[in-house]
Image (cartoon, rainbow, N blue to C red):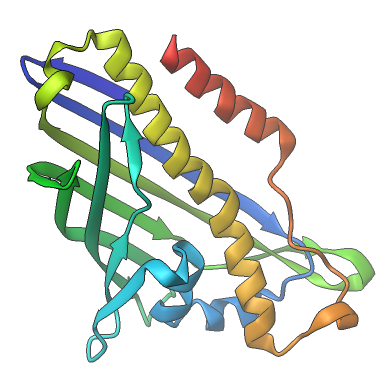
Length: 223
């Protein structure tokens, strides 16, 4: 996680690597599933907070974020417009943002936000339980943000701002690490038409060691 303050402006960024083995998940079927941008987006963000903008192109969406409490002083709301594209040649999934609107305590504020991500083509990764194949899901998501401090935030010391930024990063990246991978496999199973106990493989949990390392990094950033 990066953080910098220049006068009354702050700049911060973060990046998350995704490298997860999905047990009992057919790589051929999963690759077909990920060819549809709507399916990828549905696993990436709460469906009630997604609005399709351009169905003709098939990959433009407006994503509404849950309100974020920043440093206990401001409640921040925003939406970001993104374009998600699947390369028909190899299945590479890419995402980029191109517009954002933000309010703080109900008033418009100027914030720059750049989101970028990619999912590599799915590959087989050995077998799972009961002889079922497994898939390897690899990719990344990153973002950069900057904006002018307003109101009482101008008077906040850097340590308070850094702690607030670490909290925002934790909320965003923990969701990406935990819920995105779960959402991919859960939605893929529904897409396959598999229901209930007919297929016993559970949605994989995030590796405990990686989770501890992630949380430890955020804790250090807050100190």
